[in-house]
Length: 194
Image (tube, rainbow, N blue to C red; front, side):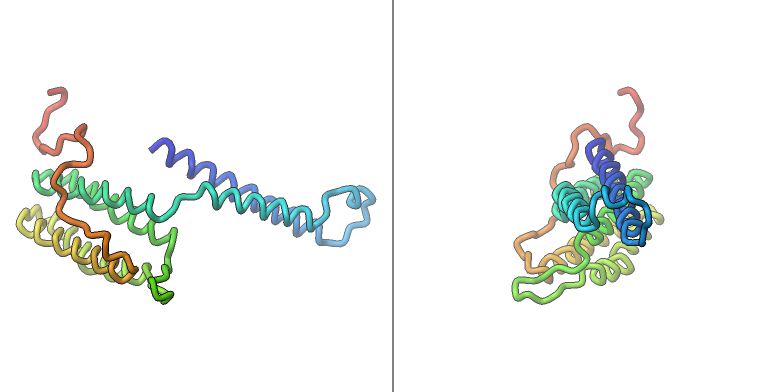
């Protein structure tokens, strides 16, 4: 989490630097009468410096697989929270799953399939969110365990449909068999400390 927060801060700083750089480029393209302007960095040099900074930012920005690993973590925790009828925890991991799915699609909204066709991941996610994810949320709100289990399985099928459409049929999600973190207690009646 700290590393992710640090990356976000770095990215925000970089966006600020790029914005400031673009402002400087715009100012430098305006006619000046000052003799000191000739001594300043040329517009071409500023553009080259900005391109270098953009390339650096691209090299440290997250990729879609990182965002999807987070989706898997949150979605697996959602299963165990729902299985134990820990509805507040299930709601938390449901929201985290949705948030990270949206993040993954912001990273790559259009993906090429093996044939080179565009796959609109944003449209696929919008459809899944409006149907299957919505139903999981409703089952959590209703605190309905059998419905939750059925809706969770439906969402796994929806996830796999997206993977197949993206040319990645080998990414087969399943009902998790072990929690991703042994440190979490899914029992809704757990007391602290034990």
